[in-house]
Image 1 (cartoon, one colour):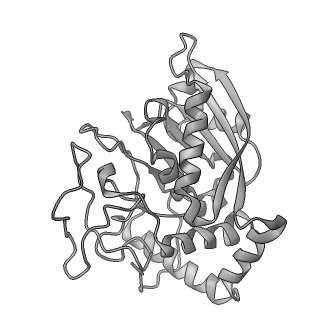
Image 2 (cartoon, helix red, strand yellow):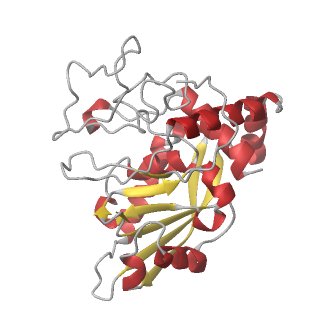
Image 3 (tube, rainbow, N blue to C red):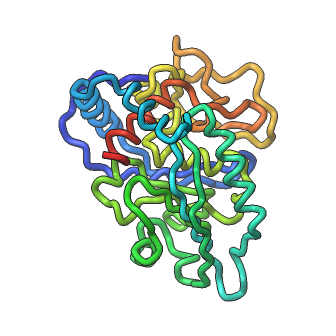
Length: 286
């Protein structure tokens, strides 16, 4: 959904996190941008797009270099474990996570290319909380590349004392805090089918489908309005689908950026793809 109000200032940290489909306990410590911040994002993006000719064509030109229709993103994996081997993940789990994620990203024009996988034993880093001094120290010492390089940290994902499945910084935030840029995946959720694709969506500036509620929404025109996330205890898609925003259609439970049972499907919409492409061109490759 598109925001239409104009606010000139946006300076909010939006640490975003994914979900565990079937865990009834708190699984997300997402600090959502408030309505004013989302509206400011919309204003800034409209101004930027108006000054950039043919954004879709520019992206396609970049992606086609080298004969590929995909833009490959250099990806560095950092597996943090404790001295007692808590947090250890087999190579097969990491490889499958990348493979499944790349399948989910086929419609977006992006693919992850793993450059290296590094294993580190550090109890303090493993247990570090989001935005803590210990986690910042970890990022400063391990992070590779610039804003166009994805760093994935497998560890305990802890936000405000709660264990979550994952979190990431929006591309907008990476401009202000590039040293904190990256994705954290909790080792207990490493086999979750959509976790990495969900966090990659945040890394490419996608909000949850329910962020902003019925208005201003998630700044994507072709995702139905959604007032709130839903909690489910099975993998069966509800029938009928919930409809939390009047006259906006059913909630988009089939969307990767929502919280929903796996039986609902896992897609990115064309509008979300365009938003990701804009983030790549205007922020991560700028």
